[in-house]
Length: 84
Image 1 (cartoon, one colour):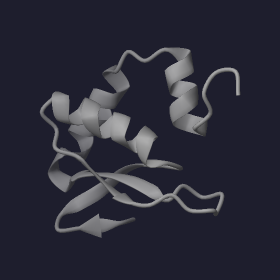
Image 2 (tube, rainbow, N blue to C red):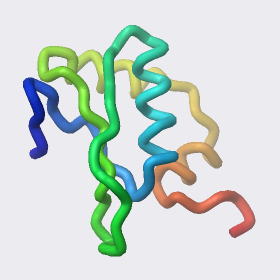
Image 3 (cartoon, one colour):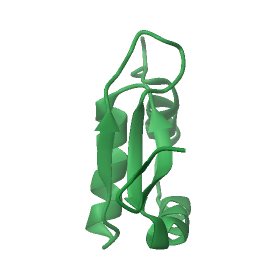
Image 4 (cartoon, rainbow, N blue to C red):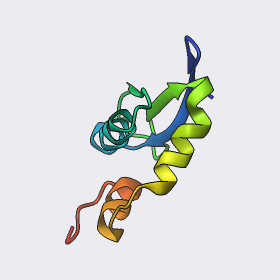
């Protein structure tokens, strides 16, 4: 688990765009978040969304409440846009 100054990993993605969507959503809902890392060529996700450790449970709850379309969830999971 990546930890930086009390921040803990909330999620990991393959690219900064997907991670940025999550960070934006969490921040708009009063849960500080940041992106750390950079995309790599390995199959493992290399971009992490971090939240303060004491807000990890809140971040999970907020993300579970997010109303995302199937296409949006697919993009976040795979990085592929519809039709690719």
